[in-house]
Image (cartoon, rainbow, N blue to C red):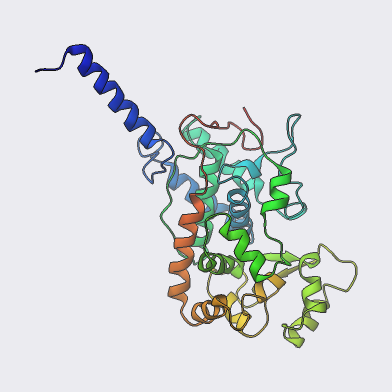
Length: 320
């Protein structure tokens, strides 16, 4: 027997709801193909300009992305300033006096708003800019779904609790990454992001003065600009060989016990799975790039806000 008109309508309506609910929460590389097709070119050009002015900003943007995704997912919450309803993540211990690059994201957002007003989230801009920074500094690109929306709040307590410390042991690192659905292999590959960027003396002082798994001449060299007391904000390159190039020299440094942070050098601890991975990545840059790209794809999918959740911020530093 043929279905009634009302019955057909009901079935069709339920089918539409199913399609909508199934699509919600899904990110897609083509999300802005119709609403903002010029987005990739805009972000690429603006990122190129920022890197021409200051190559070190590439590491800063990549770190911003890590610190965003590790705290309640990749939702742009790390970009928010404090307001009357919450204390943001910028003042958390792992972020205070450390995170930078906010002005670059602001500049990219302004440019995107000109060509595609009220369309692209700050969370997506940060994700795209991080990928551009790595690729433009010589590293790999990776599959990046888009369609994130921006958080309307932030949490200093979650930032303090979730972000791994530079003094972390291997079990602590593995646990912190596992809590985000990332494997020990992902963690080791993502640590390779330290092939670019710099660290503050306060974050590596204990390693160069107190650890035994550090090359003596390397420690002495770093101690000249990072004394036993004072100079907390003095900077040193995480990878002294090629500080502004995204390559596998970071892992080669670990083989020579020249990792700057305690959490870097512990990856090269005999008898651990990470030990073998460090050896692999040090000798095979293609293996490192492939694993880094795969891990970045996984990390960029951490708990995005999609559909009707969150908002598209007009200003990345404040809610609408």
